[in-house]
Length: 109
Image (cartoon, rainbow, N blue to C red; front, side, top):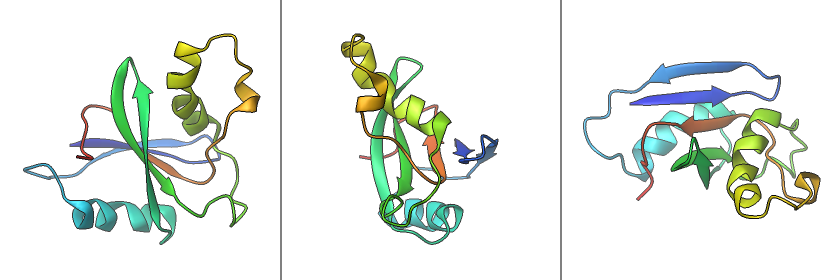
């Protein structure tokens, strides 16, 4: 299963994980926590390439004052802005810190 690591500095990395079935919370957390520096994971449903997908971020990223993540913010805001194209994007919440995106399928059930 493919996933993308979107870092606040704009770098992206694609990796795969060998899950043979839909993962449970513990499997997801084991993969993601080290990538978000041990933070508590927060699930975010997003619209990516016209499909509902899963993204994970550090739940406490804003209180930790992590750096804004422009690529993840764009993906996060896409669903709302698709339905409300006249809304000002900067009036919407934004993503901070490293984000993990599963671009090919829904894993959070």
